[in-house]
Length: 467
Image (cartoon, rainbow, N blue to C red; front, side, top):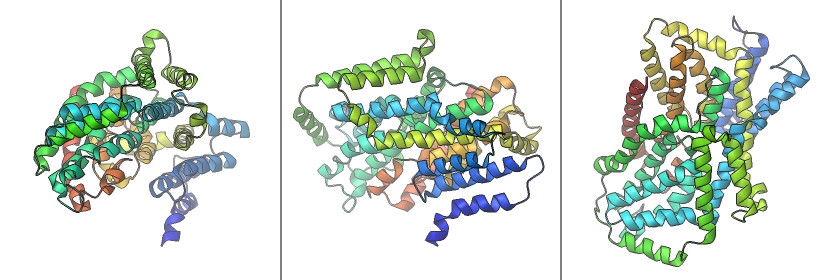
């Protein structure tokens, strides 16, 4: 059974390729779609590392010459993702996260919030949430942010109050665990750079539909939309899944002691803070300053290396960053191939035929709901984005007025962070928080269903207002 599962991407691709080519598609487009389906299956089950799945799909497609008429065209297509600005923006942001970690600035910010807000369990919940929100604009890996930075700090708190997975988990640990994962899902939708698949989605939207979504465009809609949800989330968890211990007077003292051990804020921490603010200024006001967001990120990265915040060795040995760069670059190329081979137009026409006659607003809401709910079948937001976003954009294009297309694009991409709440495997940090052992699997699914419905209804409301 394990062997069958391991080779299932190859089996899926081979079976689809062996089927007759559907009417409206060329044989090359059908073979491309078969390989693309195999890549998506590979991203879901990961028989080999995800980056290798994408690289293998691109290499096989180029070798077979499925995208263009000449080897040069196929080569250019295969390497196109590596010249993509969004991919290098993601890479640079990983280095920002490393800067937060190496300087200790991320830990210091979190400890200060716990010291200020931690006198009650609800306050601790808000401290965890605000820690995530402060880091979110600069850390596109919510796994690095939530699981790598917030979780190690938050996990120290419940045992101080005799709350462990084996002993009184509901006393405090279960509540803080749920706030940790639910708040990062909201912040992942709040900022364009808070979730790597957000950036991937924006690039796919531009390639498939010609719609450009900038950092500021995202912020103008999603920050006001997500802010009430962010503020409500710790309280909602406190009401639906309340801790039995309501007060935590020792937590501020513990945080103060940890801050005392860290000492005064260092020069490098101040430098890292100034670089983060500089990057944010460029990202928000890049259009007015005539500076591309990717160029700004690489510029700030160079400053970080030149001033010793991180070393060049840190850059070239950061396996996670290079892995994501390879992974996303190949997925961008595969997504672009869907349009180049005519697959997107074919699928979009087929689906839109069933939605013809509906009001445009109804079509948009239905697509947002379906896009959200289908995440139950994905263990990777990246795989979800790659498989479904170009398809949904192609479906929407003939059914809504042209001026509405940028809006539905933003609503679909903006829901990627929120959908991470629904299962224990729905987003990168989920297995870490779930693996802490404070919340049973059955309870997690139940809470995921409740919060998922709440988040989805919020997204529908935002969609209705935005349209």
